[in-house]
Image (cartoon, rainbow, N blue to C red):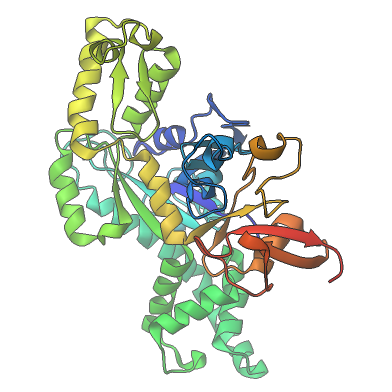
Length: 435
């Protein structure tokens, strides 16, 4: 069965990686029926925010409410896991906190072996970079460090790891390739499967390079070219430029932005997100994760709420700190950037949300979540990779149970090999049995 996607957070010590993980998971909170939890010491559940199917006005009986109309779907959307707020869905996704990396990791320096062993399971990486320039390449306190160097050497460590393993076996691998007349994809997949690769990943790697020489004639330069392309394909990476509220961050962000593709970069302040969420739990502010706005008791009183939303009063020190955070992060950048980090990672993976339902007419699950026009809808949501088929989703949800047929909106039957996408075959009802 297709496994759930896994996103790994990587970075040197003191880059803010663990703080970023905490801001993505918020392990003390509970959203809907699904608690934010740490699965293992370095595994956790984060939440990806995306448009829910319940917000689509094109769906039957989902027009604006009137005295005679059924209750709109978004008011009846009650996820089994995560939450749905006004049509924005929080979908759980597994995160991996990879051991801190330092230069020389591929030679075993620091926690290099642990880092690389963890890395092999990841589908995408979030590289947390300290753009304040106040930590050196080993995470030690300094001033004026160039964080663009971190981006270069971390990727180089991954390339050197894969390349070193490949070159150790290259002689025997090449002889076997020639003897059994294998394809380049078959030979490389035999070596790269240990990194969680598939034949499709290897094929895309070679298609990207369009090499004309047969594998047995590759020189060292060509092999390194192949490994670089494989790393890009197997470990797509989002760069989270963290600590953007530091005075020295601007010049470092500008330099990195000139060298890296814009779609790979996200500006963020993980410590600000953690701080705001903590204050919201303690009842000092009203704040939705990822929002541009944060309201204090005084703000709400000014807006006409005499009780200030029931929020606690703050002392001058805390009030000043919040105002500074608003000015330096929220108003300037539009948010803390933390939610955008996961969103960007899902985009580089090409993740597609699919909503399995039991009843394709009502979008309900028939699990006791109410009845009739008030029944709970869209209880489940699964994430699959772009290019997945209806059959892939069926096996992910139903396992090895025999498939009779699958329906989408309107009771239209769809084929097992039909592709799913946002707004296309992404609301599905599975019927088990023999067709």
